[in-house]
Image (cartoon, rainbow, N blue to C red):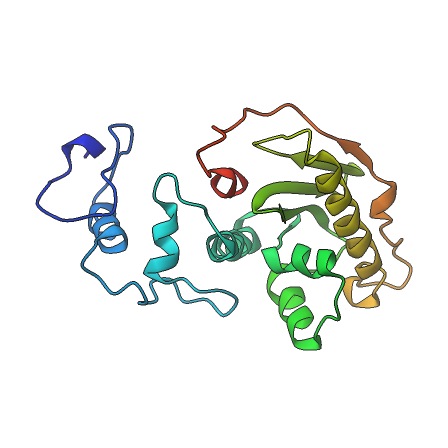
Length: 222
């Protein structure tokens, strides 16, 4: 069923566009998530690291700003999928990682152990690390490719006035990651060369830009 064929009898937060196609039970799921008659506090996606409530998922409606909860749910989903189907170890880090690096505060043992166990792994077979970053309510993505020695900065709404601040944020996160990867926990062998991420090449490819008024940066990062 195409979006513009959706029944109009149910109240939902937004009407699907004609480009959206729903198969089978997806229609029921759509109405359950975006229906206006349900409890916004109901947990639809259980997760230990973030809140998967209907209220959080409602931020996926057009023009809304997507926050930490959605990106952390995406990271959790991708980590579970990657662990089963992807050759080569990929880390999809939660937003908490960059927040810790940028705030330069003490990391609780429990928080860091949770991130290690659920979002990270051993370095020997590591291929890529995906790190969502936020500066002044704008999301952008940093991808670290260990196999190529490369750091890629992806930004859907570049801004010359914010560039220096975003570059500093990237540097701080990379520096934090490098210091973290000196820990023996991440290595199966003591003889494995430690990853000096700060020495990697940096690239900033041209990417399509979002509408400045769309609030879509979180969706782009996801």
